[in-house]
Length: 130
Image (cartoon, rainbow, N blue to C red; front, top):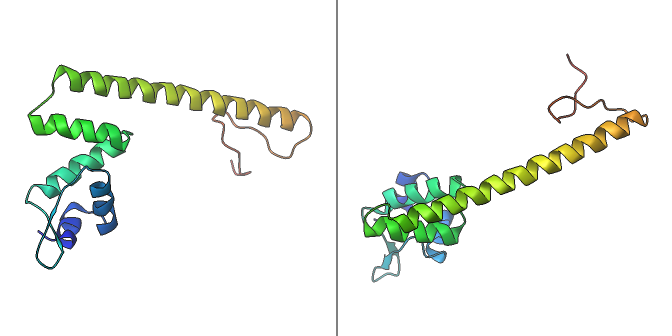
């Protein structure tokens, strides 16, 4: 399949496919005219790449997960890798919640000091409509 066909079937841009190749996540060959040619399983692989990215995994981890997938399944190493990534995301989420809470406290303090906005319970500014 040519790059445009894979992009259309996978629901991604041609640019995304080129990026996946640059990251060594997707492979193609070239025909005599220099055009990229993909195997029939490229669309399925792109779907997996997209799911892994949407799970918050960086390219380096996606590459490793793909190599395990090519080998035929979920090895203990793959489970360990995914567990470590989940734990990393949990730490990031905690850090973001802490930063949001500090920002909320700053907004509340500014309000007490005469600022115009009133803090809401969820950390988002109110727009005056109730």
